[in-house]
Image (cartoon, rainbow, N blue to C red; front, side):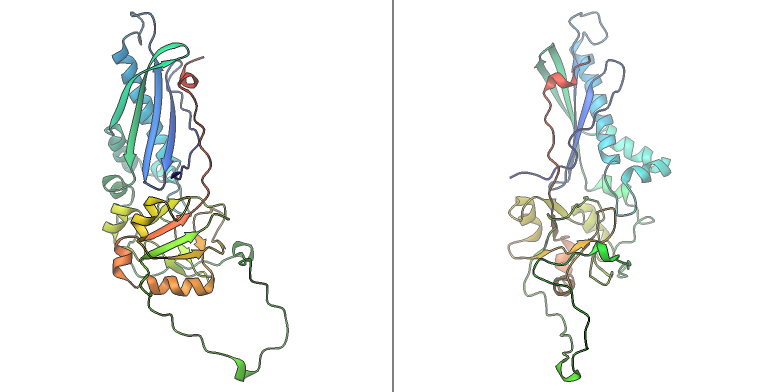
Length: 313
């Protein structure tokens, strides 16, 4: 099953003749990785003539690529992770320390120009890393106070089977029906939001809104411990993705987003009827404790350069 990949290629020149790092984010598994290849100089007396030295340089480049990959993520609709790191040097230092200790997998590879050392650094968007990125002083989890947003008309899209209401006389009072109270969550095990028709941008803290601009789901409902362990939502290509099944269970409520709640592409709007069902679903503490929400999106296709692409020109 194709995983959701955010970054196609990130190139980082770490010195005049150093390796180039290729970074990517897998939003389904919550894994960040960066790969670097450092050529081994045929001259054993050259600085990178020793394979061990070349591997260390590749590892440094990979970890730097991991930092840049993390910094390029969206934090929420207002900020990128890089924005937070730039404005808080203490936070940046702690995050950098975590990434500098990230696991490295490496070994020798052959390129069109000869021998090289390859290193891949990985980290997970969960646990300690999110604990550092989302301190209680920055994010108010489980406040119970939904955010409110004024939605522009162009930010909510009509579903294909609906047409705009035409101006005309109001219906007779006898024909009006009072709205019914939302039913219980009817045994649904989670929520899957199909947003593949929208230009979605994944984020650590997305918010789902109803058409009135009132928040349905987000950090304001979720326990902090659950968000650190799971992230607020899984992003995947299809509802059949294993990550979606694991997160949302065997009987999720499947809805189609009606639009984006802002220009960032992070937050989504649900149609009125689906919003009421979702609101009922989120009365379940068990659903909230699992962060049982998945967002279906069309990820950009990553490039897969050959090892030769990382060789210095």
